Image (cartoon, rainbow, N blue to C red; front, side):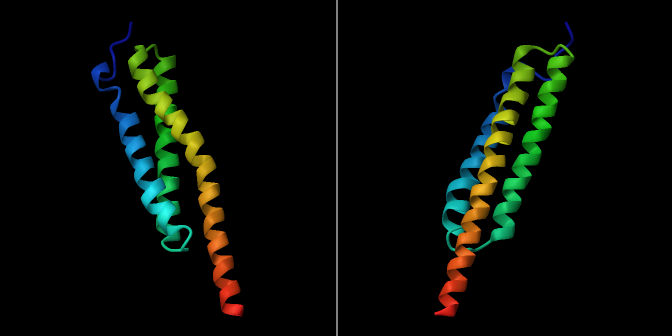
Length: 112
């Protein structure tokens, strides 16, 4: 068997960090600012950054699996990468629609 890339005891860290980042971006940022139409670039930028980071973790998990790394290594990288990649890829569209709806409300209010 190949020597592990890192100690499997630390395999929980990528999932915990992505989960905390997702909770921090989803509720306080997107939930508060998207309906108001504020900080669009920053909020969507966080979503795209998490998607990229998730893709890197997923690729690392696949590479670890193919190279024969222990279960904790490839699963610790691959599962949070896959989960966050799928979730944030879907949710970024939902948040973008919230910003579009806020822009429409703003435009309609100016017309009245």
